[in-house]
Length: 376
Image 1 (tube, rainbow, N blue to C red):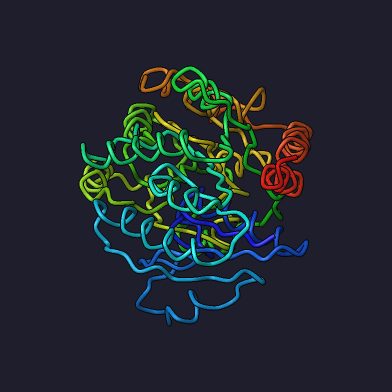
Image 2: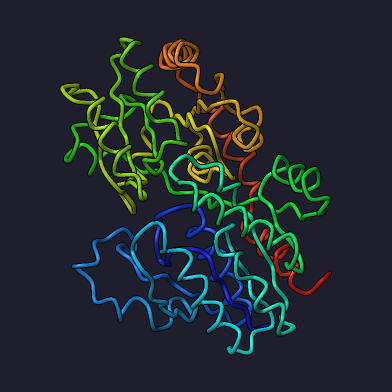
């Protein structure tokens, strides 16, 4: 099949879960013989590096692991970025002779009607109910809801990543969807090296928060609970902002003068692997999620995890971690203290890894997605 992917920011990149999903699916589809074109959005990061240090043409308009990458220009303001990209990518894709155009995330689905008019099969993956996210204003929220409604009306099939979102579409629109979760690759465990040099971390001496610095991830709850807890372990905050400069300023003020809180900025590669491999506890205190890939990654390392009790987090974690009441700083503080005094046994770590490996296999997920494309 000739397949097009629209809706992410760009690959190769770890700017968000959508980018990881697009790359993992596209690589595997290409390896088994399909022709995949990915419409990258012009922007500021390629594989986590600053755009000033990279020749963009080397990263956008060429083959990457057999995938054809096409750069789509767009404005860099949060109000126009996704809209302009979705319009231009859809117009270009319509004339690309694709068998399937796969839209990712609600914003891009605002244009899913266009290829449908030309008789092209369209698939929408709803990575989460994006209009619920706190960073968006009134216009952006309405635009995302419009994209959701366009997916309901025009998508040949809709894929969702959680049972909770599947129920939402059934209850709200009486539209049936197909549940296909994200996957994970079981990683290589790394000893402390780079993170010791950069941040003075020794291993099992820090709590890890790894996500975008946006309000719905609940980092402000974690910082306040940590400050109240008196825990000796450090708090490592890994991630960059996403159109949320005001929130980043709030976080910076909250951690001011606290030497035990470390902000690393965006991380990837060996540094990321070391942070996951050696953390005492991974915490995801989010208010809103689609399917949290960073939580899935932490579990794939066999780590002790503490998450807010929203359905999307609990569905991924199952019995292999702990939860606290969403937004409840007192409950979060108490759970932090309990879990920082409790180290997992090696057997329990292996049990978690084996369970995650079985449930979230990328090869099986790719095959399930291809079945949706072919109507099987």
